[in-house]
Image 1 (cartoon, rainbow, N blue to C red):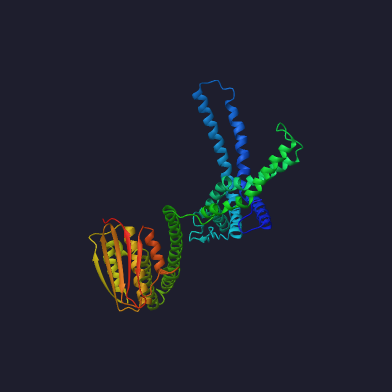
Image 2 (image 1 turned 90 degrees about the horizontal axis):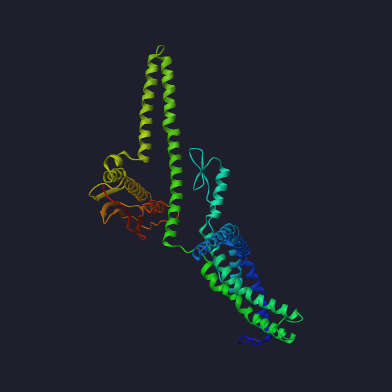
Length: 450
């Protein structure tokens, strides 16, 4: 008997034993799609092809009928696999990865989509990242279902299960079938129509030897197939864009929630409280106007001061939502207004021939506002420059300072938020901020000017 280089009969027996075990395991892991698809295909074929039995028609018409019946069988089989796939693919892929890691030292780390947190909106509805729900329980349930069954990694696992069922499964099962067939021949007293019993025993021995020779190698097909299909889902350009847009949508949803909470808190704690106080003061003045005019006048003066304060708070709140100067005079003047309010000296230079689109204009304005706020809080700068420019259908806003540098778009930082907001318009953020300074950050968004 042939033995592997550097091994003896004992080594060969060990390899055969391991091969038998591993082939059997692989058959169990990869046969699930076939267990559902093959019966459906065979039963569907028996049913569908019976429709045209005894059909008396020209050859072309019979061929067309056969093609239609074949398509029906394919459709039934595909539907069966589509139903089975989300329920089994992840479990089978995980089992295959464990076997690949243990047998081949092949580490294939993947990440499945986690269940996103649900958010209670100001309207009272719950947002699961995709749709609104009336109850938190329903929102959490739908978020879990969406994360489970709309995960690209799950679909990639389904492709692995399909590919493995037509590659790994037949190769791993063939030696086992050969051994089983050879064993059946040995147990049969004689091979019908094949000559004497010795001839049947000789065929059985040949088949079993071939199966034993193939067993140590058959299971190794797992390696190349696993490397190609069991790892993380490949990210195409379209896939990267989808992932990016999903992240942007989630970020915008959270931003919207925080903004609504800020507005609600500002109205409740500010203007609403002052309007209530005004109503109480005016009611008290109404009661005192005849008996104590001086006290009534004092209350009315207090109410008038409260109304002025409430009006100022409302204007400040509206300015944070949509600055009037931005809507009325455009991006350049709005940035200059930011520069005047900054605690650091800011020089604004503009090379914009006309106004950009309103959504882009708003995005650039709030990006510059965030950058100037970061400079005032962290940069220890003495001078800041803001340059607005437009070239090759690209609107850019560059903020530079002479501060300490070291700015980076870490998770949860203001720069990270600016990057994601710019990405929503197909833009980008370039950060040049060595430790010690200076810092130069450019926000670039493609757009057309009006």
